[in-house]
Amino acid sequence: MMQRTTLAPGLEISRVLTGLWQIADMERDGRVLDLDAAAQAMAPYVEAGLTTFDMADHYGSAELVAGKFRRASSAAVQCLTKWVPEPGPVSAEDTRTAVERACSRLQTDTIDLLQFHAWTFADPRWLDALWHLEAERDAGRITAIGVTNFDTAHLRVAIASGIRLVSNQVSGSLVDTRFTRTLAPYAREHGVGVLCYGTVLGGFLSEKWLGAPEPNWETLDTWSQMKYGRFIRTAGGWGVFQQLLQVVHAVAQKHGVSIATVASRWVLDQPGVAGVIVGARLSHSQHVGDTARIFAFAMDDADRSAIAAAQAALLPIPGDCGDEYRTPPYLTASGDLSHHLSSFPAPFSTRPGHDGRTLALSGTVWEPMAGYSRAVRKGQRIHVSGTTATHGSRAIGGTDAAAQTHFCIDKIAGALQSLGGRLEDVVRSRVFVSNVNRDWEAVARAHGERFGHILPANTMVEAHLIGDEYLVEIEVDADLGPA
Image (cartoon, rainbow, N blue to C red; front, side, top):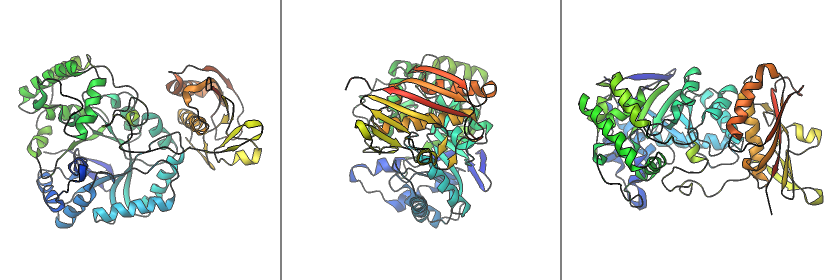
């Protein structure tokens, strides 16, 4: 029987979700998809208990297909979609327009779950989008809000700032286990369900590739294969992947199921995982029966130990969840963001200062009042002012010192980017903590997460900060090197 879970009041989903991202692939190069036939192809999934479908505003006609099925069927289905706005300013009107468009395409008055993706955290306006979505939820146009491809630090920033999130959708598989490190434990502690996609690596975790020669990575059939081929190569290559595949095949044979079924079940068994998303090529091939068998068996300790031993030979996928979209190496279909974005706007406004300086202004209430800039560039040096967890007139991060630290560093990164620098250019950081005895370790660990690969000179001291809500303040100096 298909297991189900409750993400939010009024939103119960099947723990195996059907992903519709392949609709975009099926429409690639101008191909036209029969939307009515694709909608009819959803019926066998629902009949098998797979009532939850995952899609996005950029998955081609996926929302239209789901809307057609919803209109024609009396079955109770859950349609989870995503909003992926361009980086830059996001207004309440922009948000309302996106929500109304999704409602229209899905033929519904209320979106079951709207999942938000932020391209960069150096631009704090991602928080504006979430606050606008909360207004849409409070108005009844959204049942619940989730995020997608958020790392632990920024899930923490959102939660600590009082934003009510019910899910975070991230990559998760036998090869990509980043979600198990810090994200799933934090999400579980705060009632956020982790939804994992990529569990079968675009089909590479299947009998088709067992014992097969290494493919030509430049001539793969689908975007999913292009993307997850990069994960396989990053994890050590085809040889160690084949070793893992052999072990998973043995477990699958033992239980009379497929490699893909074992791969999905392994992810589902990880603490904090609410569901896995298994892609479907509607109207082309159906794996309903195979997917429905995910809960028809259970792995024992011997199975898990054998899989763990094979995983130990893999190289860990670097970084945290979502980093593949924000920092090199970009583990995307194209190996960069060219399929998604053309450019990033500067997070903060800049203007000329005197004596050849360039000033960056972050828009806090304090800057015009006290007469200072967020950062100043003179020549190849950038000096960033003492920065607290402030966005506009809002204090960010609540009483969580780590969340405040991450947001301070995000703002610093945004100031540096606006002036032509980057976090890696920082040569000196100074950290002021309002209560060192209580918060020094949380602040230090967050600083270490962000600067551990840079290792600037650093000082941390206790200081009486202006504003009782602020737990930490950080200033930095950066050197951009020779002109």
